[in-house]
Image 1 (cartoon, rainbow, N blue to C red):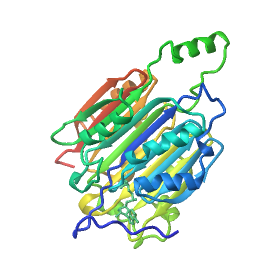
Image 2 (image 1 turned 30 degrees about the vertical axis):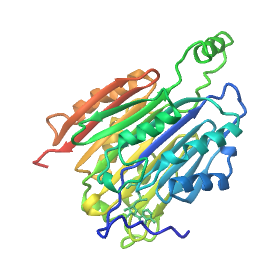
Image 3 (image 1 turned 135 degrees about the vertical axis):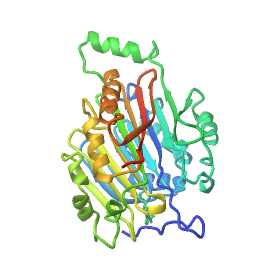
Length: 355
Ligand SMILES: C[S@+](CC[C@H](N)C(=O)[O-])C[C@H]1O[C@@H](n2cnc3c(N)ncnc32)[C@H](O)[C@@H]1O
């Protein structure tokens, strides 16, 4: 596979590892036989032209299609679409085409949308409508007038932006449908996994980052095994890619339709690693520790979205113990938010001076 060359944003080499993450869920009640996976590869390629990225690899199972992109990943399941792209890509620009393609599948109502990203390292090199969060919100508001936008963390230092809209659960379908289901003893229609953890890491260990380069390994598969990425969630079927001269991306999918995805920008001056998964665990503390031990960041952000209220709070309590004042980690921020159908944990850590 011929991967396009990294776009030069200025004479000094720089790559923005920080991704823009877009997740859209469609209402299936009007079209129970609808399926976003009927959208063809050509249609996805056409849609991704608006984003300015390309498909470089593909894997699937009976629940989920996983595309590895020249700038990160796209996951397609029956009624949920996820696009994660880095660099100077423009993911919001494909939204209107996505809605048209979904409508052909019978999906005309969105139940949830999440758009999120960490603050960029170099916002000035981004393209419209991603030149700033206000511009992104204005663009999203023109499509989803009821969306809400938030900033977690410190607006003048490290932060994480979120734009979200959830269709209210009211008599127009949600609550009524649920009551009818309970009366008829039908299973909950929301069978798809409904939690997402992201760990966004920076200032990574040089020796670990040196692994993700063509100097050390020829293929993604070799570096997946040597780095220990294959041990993080062992049930995942992995599709990986090692960029030339450096850089790494992987998608993992399992038999339950859950996914994981890791993207690595190893260049020392702007090193960045992201880990994301919707794997259902009762508590994420062990997974977080394993990811941190694998990549050895100098600072990281954790976000957990879950519609099970206990999950975010339990993990929050344990994180407080694991990364307490007794360890070398300093918690710079921690916030917990209740949204209409989800709870969100946001926590930010950096290594203490002594470590
Ligand atoms: C696509 S990967 C992973 C991006 C991801 N968002 C992350 O976490 O950093 C980006 C890394 O691959 C390198 N790279 C090499 N060739 C590339 C290409 N054709 N397109 C994008 N990145 C490339 C970049 O310099 C960077 O280190």
